[in-house]
Length: 159
Image (cartoon, rainbow, N blue to C red; front, side):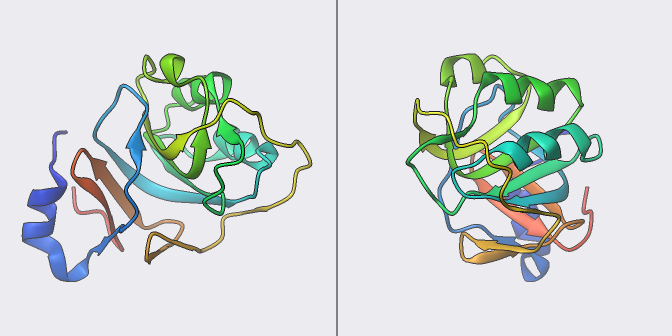
């Protein structure tokens, strides 16, 4: 189903939150949407991998990596897990690596940038929690819509 965030904003502006952080696109899929699943981590991607393996199909995994650009939280291997599980996409408040490989995946991927260094593997963080970044609140179960013009969140499914 095609959509444009601009059209959704025109019709539903009063009930939407608009992310103020500009994310770069790294996946082949430019527009994606789905119910939000969340993980909060910092320079450690063990829980991100666990979330990719367990969140429901068609979900969008929203990852608050604290905005750190000191290492990557996801690379090609984790991206492939998202694709194989049928997730709609991932939004990372942090970095990715293997960007050339990620660009070939039929997966929506937004992140702040790239860093070739892998993350720690300590398993610290929390899953399924309310996140705050991009001057907005990300609530598990609400719906996120992302395309070339931006990222918006609705408390209900509007498509």
